[in-house]
Length: 183
Image 1: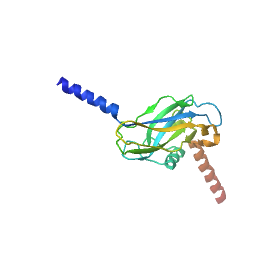
Image 2: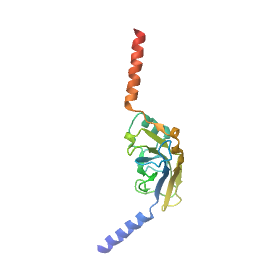
Image 3: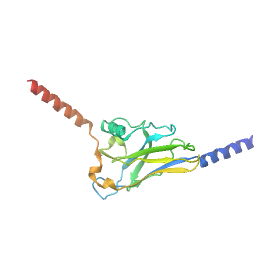
Image 4: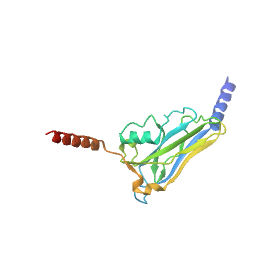
């Protein structure tokens, strides 16, 4: 029995070490309109195409931006999240739902950087270009390397997240205009 358990443990470790995985990284994020490296920001990975279902819903940039603008929940779409500190990821983000990629699998995605530690508290966001990875075997790591996001230095590259009160005030103003016209 002891030999069987030992063999099982070795097989499990070997499978874990040999499993194909995905790494993703973002480098050099700046605060909007400055040369200051970002601190207290966060980045989220979203998947646009995948060969198999690995957990997160497949989405588009437009769908995610629409959810951000309407203050909707992104939780079903988030594949991974990292903190940004000193302009870089604070933690290496490795793996994606069990590291179980197989030969022939492919995956594409983009990242959204928020100017807060949680997207629900952000006042602005930046969308990276889409990246892709494909596996030619069931082992090894592939990377979605988003690289240096030097465009974040430009304040106009960031999109504002509307405050919920802004929409309410706009509707109130519209209602008052309509009421005044009727009077």
